[in-house]
Amino acid sequence: MDILTAEFFQRALIGGALIAVTAPLMGLFLVLRRLAMIGDTLAHVSIAGVALGFLIEVYPVAVGLVFAILASFAIEMLRRMYRTYAELSIAIIMSGGIALASLLFTMGKGFNLDVTSYMFGSIYTLDRTDLLVIAAVTVIVLTMVLIHKKELFLLTFDEDAAAVSGLPVKYFNIMLSILTALVISASIKIVGALLVSALLTIPAACSLALSRSFKSAIILVVIIGELAVLAGLWFAGVWNLAPGGTIVLLLIGILAVSIMTKRIIRA
Image (tube, rainbow, N blue to C red; front, side):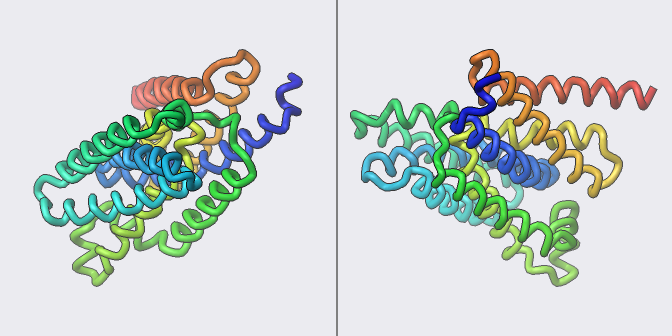
């Protein structure tokens, strides 16, 4: 239990607790809008930014964030261009992100190991700068969601009706894309780019299986996210396991229990 008093573990708990609010919350909006794979896309683009950050010796998460935001604009532009095939935009940007990341990997000789840690997560290496970035992202996301909760609800469930009612759909689509980019960029050092989509989508899947209203879904998705991240970190710390993988496997276990519970209730 000495690990609980270690400063690096306490920073990990704080960072994990913050991202466990925003990532599942944004994931719920993405899942309901059938854009679940956007998490993987922006995560891969962020890794390209992280690699560039190491290459030019600039704070990697900041460069990854810029890349993710630019990618979110590109996805939204392509999504409007190919309305009937909206998922095509995600595939195009993901391919570009992976290609750019691989190119930067070949250019980087001494930092590839550091970049790899962002792919699988390195929550125990969070420093004060990382925590400040995560905290700022959390405040921004929660503020925007609370201010625009009614508009986001309408946009999520019926984009055409939102447009007809006079809602600036383009603005809110871009806002959601930017908020998602912020969350993913802040998350990759915690669970890693390869696992970040799980933190976005699995709590949402659990919540939708158990909830009966949008409000209850939002509350449940945050509770499930917090439970998985904090419990996963504790298990990983005590038994010396990979934190990101432990969190994701715990989320899958919670999803299995949620689906069984739903079936029992229906029966």
